[in-house]
Image (tube, rainbow, N blue to C red; front, top):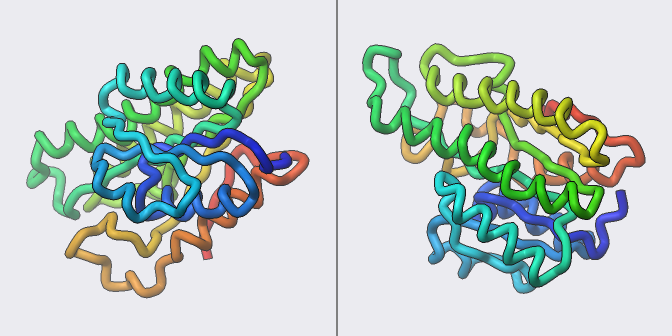
Amino acid sequence: MQLKDKIVVITGGSKGLGKAMASCFLKEGSKVIVCSRDESEFINLEEGILGIKVDVTKENELQSLAEKVVTQFGRIDIWINNAGIGMEHVSIEEIDSVLAHEVMEVNFFGTFFGSRSVIKYMKKQKFGTILNIISSRAFDPSPLSSIYSSSKWAVRGFTELLRKTLSMENISVIAAYPAGMQTDFFGKTKPVDYKNYMEPEFVAEKIVENLKKETLEEELIIKR
């Protein structure tokens, strides 16, 4: 796919992998729109990237985002469901149930709401690509990150269903499964082997390289 002048929307795009992807798309000549629920983070975006405040757990805000982009740019070529959060590594019986709900709301429902918000526009324009950033935990769950792993298993299942649903609509559905990355995702409790984790720029480049291929890999596993 030629990425020059493509309209790209990235949820959770103000930091970490989202920010790295935004930078990669910008270098390819794409028009990049990112969203975050923390508007203060937009100050760190590169010039040329548009930031819009959105909470992905609120479907009406994602619908408004999609509508704004289509109104301003005429279409959406690539929509990336990237927003995600984790939680402290603890045993199942120690899990904070309130935080567990939040993880599911952001990771699963954020992807579900984002996909629903853009589908009607892509069906109308008769093309488009939806890319879901999942995690290697969707294949290899960790006992100490049971809720996070479960949320990513749910997104993996939804992605496969979405691909089947849209297979006749000329809408591609891509899943990316990165392993551990060096971002602030872990907060202050970084894994002991954190220094061996991938840099988000490396992962972003792999994702963009895949999108530039003539035949896209629908299931992109990214690891060292």
